[in-house]
Image 1 (tube, rainbow, N blue to C red):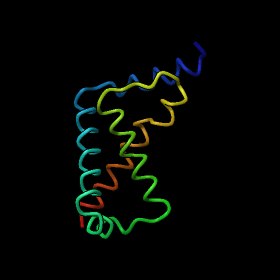
Image 2 (cartoon, rainbow, N blue to C red):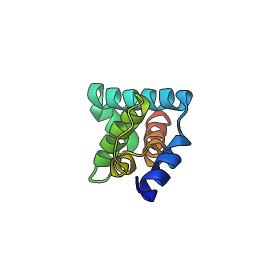
Image 3 (tube, rainbow, N blue to C red):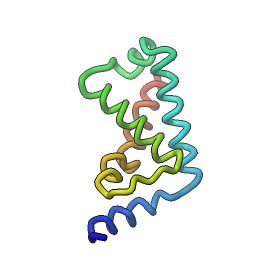
Image 4 (cartoon, one colour):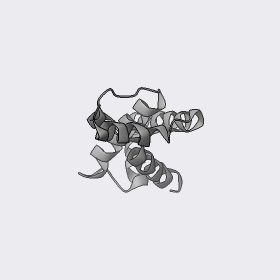
Length: 101
């Protein structure tokens, strides 16, 4: 096991919390549901879907869902790609934009 793998694993252990996982799962489920059921209203509320927001929303939703269900990728590079450290603030901001409209 490389030192980078150990470092990434230790960093992700900081977020090993059941309540945070539940919050992440609910945020991901809510964002996916809002995109599916009212995409036009959701897009208007967050300022439209553009080249940056759309892939970021999809990535953050997928990463939050992966983290929320408790799946831990085996290799360190997948843990970095689907890290909740970046996904949760992005998803929280997008949901804040939606509900502050």
